[in-house]
Every structure is written in structure tokens, then in C-alpha cells.
Amino acid sequence: MKILVPVKRVVDYNVKVRVKSDGTGVDIANVKMSMNPFDEIAVEEAVRLKEKGVATEVIAVSCGVTQCTETLRTAMAIGTDRAILVQTDVELQPLAVAKLLKALVDKEQPGLIILGKQAIDDDCNQTGQMLAALADLPQATFASKVEVEAGAGAGAGGKVSVTREVDGGLETLSMALPAVITTDLRLNEPRYVTLPNIMKAKKKQLDTFTPEDLGVDVAPRLKTLKVSEPAKRGAGIKVADVATLVDKLRNEAKVI
Amino acid sequence: MTSLVIAEHDNASIKGATLNTVTAALACGGDVHVLVAGANAGAAAAAAAQIAGVAKVIHAEGAHFAHGLAENVAAQVLAIAANYSHILFPATASGKNIAPRVAARLDVAQISDITKVDAADTFERPIYAGNAIAIVQSSDATKVITVRTTGFDPASATGGSAAVEVAAATPDNGKSVFVGSEIAKSDRPELTAAKIIVSGGRALGSSEKFNEVMTPLADKLGAALGASRAAVDAGYAPNDWQVGQTGKIVAPQLYIAAGISGAIQHLAGMKDSKVIVAINKDPEAPIFSVADYGLEADLFAAVPELVKAL
Image 1: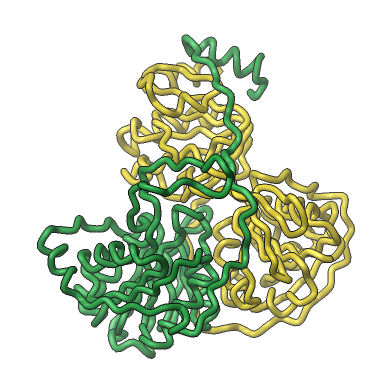
Image 2 (image 1 turned 45 degrees about the vertical axis):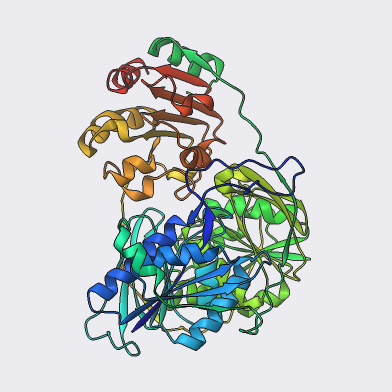
């Protein structure tokens, strides 16, 4: 069974972004870029499935600018066998990415597609579900545990059991393969990439396509009219002790 | 122009997030219909009909809707989607799971987590963990939207008298099967609906201490319990208590953060709370920059003292 793992290049988790003064977006010039953290969890999960002998090949995919190659090299350093870049300078929205991935699913016929549940830049939380709908596949979002059932290694006819994080607790689904899974934080802890693996990743196969090669129209559907800073909270006060705090909450804020 | 709200429910009653979503739908203009797709969900449909501002309830009944599987609910929405200009889901685990399937099949963009309706085609939504607000305009014929419940007041659960229309159920997709769930039973208010939330961070040090220190405070205030990602990752609190960019987004009347430093990802989940109290012994903790009342103290002394003083 092949596993396809889409990864997104985003502004690093630790960077505090600034809104551009002309209101056209956030300033990402000279800002550290990294793999979306949820996608890193997806790569780790796929690689572990290969190490367990469940998957035979793990393929990382990224859609976007040429620099996404760096993100794909990171995925290959974690352990994916090869990578595909769908190169475009057009601003990609989730529907367009889902269509590109659908074209690659048709081409590669993976048994599982594992994605991060959301990207930490646009916070959309859409791509996995959209891909599942377009490819007419079952989905399990927000996964905290993935178990491919025994004998399913060959792909078709197999099943996967997924525990999902839902409001109030956990839920378990059983899906026929092929299927789409999106990762939540507790699924695993991604490994640190080692220098030898970074070196090895440089030699792994990386194919490049364009949206035109895949026959997909990626024109954005949503137009961003303006990006602004959120309203700032007024600075509060420090209170000296618990008694003062209780007094303020009772008599000033009147919330207790 | 008519909007469709996909109700979140447990077949017997309507969940609170549906009410905020109705308010967002009304802001889009035109009539508002509510879809209740469930199993033995007559009571939920009847409750939806009572929501103020709702013109019609559509009830689709089938055993395969019992657990809200995305494949099945999306198919039901798609069966009636052509009648609507806007299709709105609450931005809950359930709504986020289903909405993109509907959008993709309609070949339209989804507008996630809206906090404001500027016009029927223009919406505000936070990006980068709430560090920026984007105003986006959709040119698609149908707007598929998830609604951040903290951005809209709940519609009144009573006062409406909508007709309930029964819709033919779409068939079971059959590719995924619900196996089981472990939903924590709790007498506490639900995190996203609570008026008061007390939240603990990594400074608690263990799940025993978390429980020993934070629970009495929550009990005293009738509050929901929350946690920072650091506390959840360390195993001090269950994952569904996590408040933040990738956890729950909350906006209670009172949010008490104890031993939480205030990473931007945590602030993203609670900074719209009406009153924020921070208890932390580090005077430089970023949480103080958003707190209305900051108490620089050791939480292990201050929280029990607070419980006594209340």
C-alpha cells in the first residue's frame, strides 16, 4: 500500500507575524518558513506505518512555490521515499489544493492519504475533507490513533480504524481503504531529523508538475479585500492579593 | 436569498453552537432554514422549530445519521443545497468535519471560522491564530461557511414557530462505520458554552495537582475546566480541554488562567473573553498583557486562597 502525505510550507510556528501597513496581507519576507506542524505529524505517522510493514511506499506532496522543495526534503529526511512538487506561483486556496491532490491520487492510487488537520497560516481546516469528497473517499479527521487492520497491507479491501478527537471526548470509526485521515496533535511526536538522513534525502527522487500538467484550474475563489490587526485588548492592572482580586471581580467587573 | 443552517444536535436536543450559527445566518439576509439530519431526531427537529428567527426546519431521518458521519450528512446537505444561497455550519468538531465536503462537491470555496458578516458575500475571519483579521469576498454562487460561535450572540432558543418539513433521506454511504465513542460525562458546563472558565497550565506540574488545585475553583464558580496545550501535552488534562488556536475557541464572561504563560496560540483561543484574570508567578509572562486583572503569585497558594475567599 502506498501512502500519500501532502505537506504545506508555512510561516514557522514561533514567528509572530505582522500585518503589512497597506493592509494587503501579512509580511512574510525574510521570515522563517517550516513545514506545517500538523503535516509533520502526518509524515511521521506515514513513515511509522512503513516501518511497521503496513505501507510499502510513502510519497510526500507539496503544492506551491519552488521553495516548497525544502519542505519536501524535510519530509524525505523524516523518511518518505520520494516527493512530488506541484509548482505554481499562484496563491493556492484549499479547494485548488484538494483538486491538485485528487489528480495525484488518481495517478498514484494510494491506500491512505494522511494530511494535517489545518495549516497554521490560514487556519482553514478544509483540504483533507475536500480531497475526500472529490475522490469520493471516506474520511476520519482529527485523528489521535490510526490502526490499519491486519491483512490490509495490500490496499484495496482493507480497513483502517481511526480514533478521532471530537468535542467532549473521542470517537472511533472504521473505514474501508482507500481513505483520507487528518491528524490531530496527539497522534504522535515527530522524530528529529538526523544529519545522515538529511544527506540521504538530497538524493531521493523529486518530481515536479505544474497545475496545467494535472489539468487543474487553481484560480483563487476568495478575494482578500483587507487584512488588519485584531482589536487590541486594553492593558489591565496588577492586583496585590487575592482579596483585592475578589473585590474587583465582584464590584468592578461584576462577573461573580 | 435563503440560508441553510446545519444543526448540531444529539437527536434529542439542539446544541448551543447552532444558535450562534442561526444569528450569523440571519446576518447574511433572507430567510433561515435549519436542517436536522438524525436518527429518531423528532425532538431535536421540534426544538429547532422553536429557535427565534427560523422560518423552516427540514428533518431528514435515518439510522445512518445517528452519529453524524461526514459522508452521510454531507450527502443530505447536498441533496437540498440547490435551494440555498448560504450554507452555514457551526465551527465545531462536527461542523468542520462536514462543511468542506459540501463545499468541494458544490465546487465552491469554503469560508472558515467567520467572526462577522460584512455583506452577503463578504466576511471577516481570523488568520494566523488570530494575529490578523482577513476580510474576504466570495464570488461563488453558494457560500459554504463555518461560524466561529464566539463571534455571534446565540439566537433565542424559544419564541419561534417554524414548520417542520420532512425530507427524503439520502442513502448510507457505507464506506465508514461508527465503532464507538468515549465522551466524558461531566456535570460541568460545556467549555465553549460556559460563562466562567478556569484554565490551568504546565505550572500545575502533574495531573494530580491539576485536579487538586483547579477542580475546587471550578466547582466553587460553577465553571468549565480548560487547559493550555502545554498542560495537555504533558498529560495533566484531557485533550478536549485544550483552549487555543488548534483547540477550543472560547469567550466566556470570566476566564481565569492559572500557571499559563500565554503563548500566542493559547491567547488566540481566549482573548475575546470579557474579563481575563491571570495568576502567574512570572511577572514577564505574556498572559499579563491581555489580563484585566493580573495577580503575580504562586498559584499553589493563590488558587486555594481564592477558593476560600469566594
